[in-house]
Length: 100
Image (cartoon, rainbow, N blue to C red; front, side):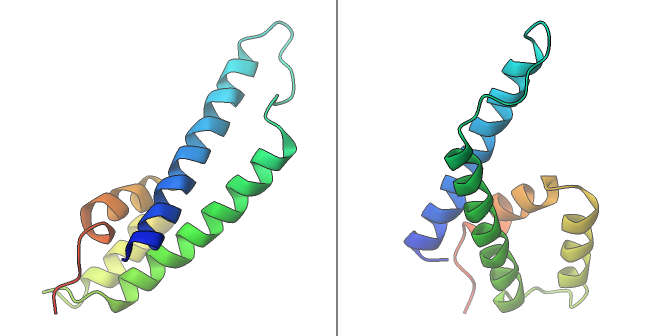
């Protein structure tokens, strides 16, 4: 991944953490209220998240692994762990240069 792609990925993670923090904060109020996150932040977070997902899967497609089943394994991990697998893959493989 180049610098721009890494920046998009990190911005997506940061914006998702911000929206999550605002949501948790709102759950603690009595009575619980809808999210106080501005609608533009939710929209930007969704767009950044979609862009990050496309970049992650593009990196997975282009990356060479020693085991040919590793790509399928990573896709299954990302699909069944509700986003945690995507974060793990991003920091384990996507942030590092692909071997030539």
